[in-house]
Length: 252
Image (cartoon, rainbow, N blue to C red; front, side, top):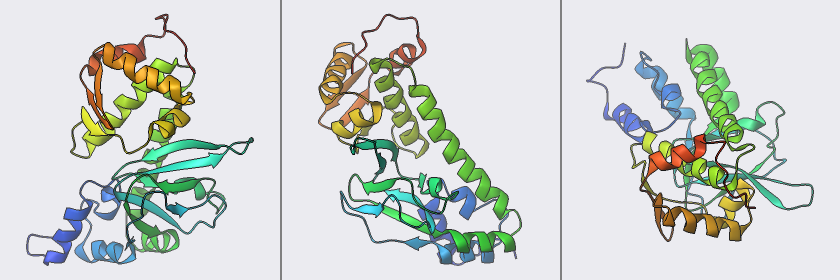
């Protein structure tokens, strides 16, 4: 029987929890029968909250599940050849992580909570088994994962060969867009990551990052109060990111 308004409260609760998650198209695909939705819910493990600084998994550990951030934020990082940490991605509510371990069976990066965070754990073996039983679920699974991987690659490509100012502008606009897709303000948000993590991710020195934030405020593009950022002139930031000919100072 197809899902309807007479379904038990349990199904409505599932939808309420998952409506802003990137996995909602996987867990709640259009036309999926109620029994299939509940079968999916049974394999999803809602882990205890991770405290700030605690690892979700470490590089080299065996792959067994993919994860979706419910609340909070996490970062992924690897160790560079010199032994220093290199931040490779930030994961916000509704986004997935752990996908880079599917191919080789071990996690190539370490995932750490940037603040108290909660995640959904989806055991990959059980998910694959269920996808064989539920028509269309495998296609949904591949589509959702492909979308997440594409967005990470797109971000890395956007940052390549850009000036320090352009890299920061691109990241701020990207964060605004990602928060906006979750129903939050796209122009006013709290940065879950530290300035040090930001500078590490963008390949900039911490002092360069501080100068850039000051320069952006003086230009009227943003205002900053502790970790709260307001994008006062998104169009100005966008113009900056699009202008490859502008002779900007190159920092960092």
